[in-house]
Length: 378
Image 1 (tube, rainbow, N blue to C red):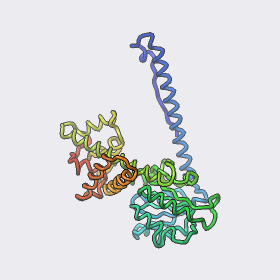
Image 2 (spheres, helix red, strand yellow):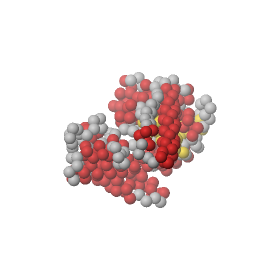
Image 3 (cartoon, rainbow, N blue to C red):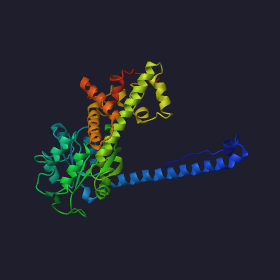
Image 4 (cartoon, rainbow, N blue to C red):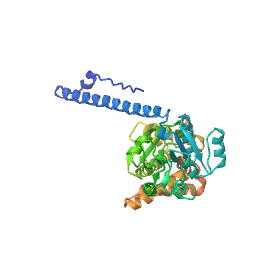
């Protein structure tokens, strides 16, 4: 993949209105800027190429990643698991929902009744679960992943759930007390990575998620073929729990930006300026953000986003409320101020309490700010 950068540098236009003594300096600055842009373009192209190479390598899974267990086959997990199957990994799955297990069984994928049974059939186990309590139970509960004494078959346990950083750290510390039943290539002991994702159900289906990874950097590098079979990028954040911390911070910023955009658009409508006009202004000015130009909350303005389908699908308000609860608790533990987090938490808690918990979090525009739908051509 190649990025093309088109820059037109007309010296006469740049210098026509400048005094003679300033022209050389201005031209020098412009040329330096041009070189900087060209260098940035090359850097971005290299990063994109690197991601593509990593994804392509997952088409023939290496031995240490070939047998993958997947626990948690909800809206996100089922699509992530399906992408692993497409990439050639041998999957074994578990979920409490018997209907989804039957669906995978009909695809020829082995299903198991307990997390421990998945563990016994896998070199790597991925979990994608709703809450910290679910993750703890799957790891340490009866018939959990760590049920079989101090010996483990999988060398890597990778949790993509959005949970609090402390739980991630505690589980990672617990895993360090275990040993591998048998050596897996160069791996002599098990590792745990926290690897939550950013991206919607659509991104999970398309394989364009972003992974935020905490834990051993060595294990992270070894797991890249697995990650790039489900996502477009994977960012190493630091030690155990740092991936979970990064995800909480990301969703905090997302909630605040969505509420800010929704509030501004609803206010504009009340003052006589259409949301369409304001969106056009935002998207070519300093207010531009993902919530305005890629996930607009106003019904009728953008196709293919939850607001265009009565806020169905997408990222449920109850999940955003849960993540904001995690952010508030983390801020308290860290001794940080969190006024915007606190207000966002109250808004999403209120939305859930009045029956909108299953609607996408962008529904705050209609159901909290009382914003008005607009036809696309307004």
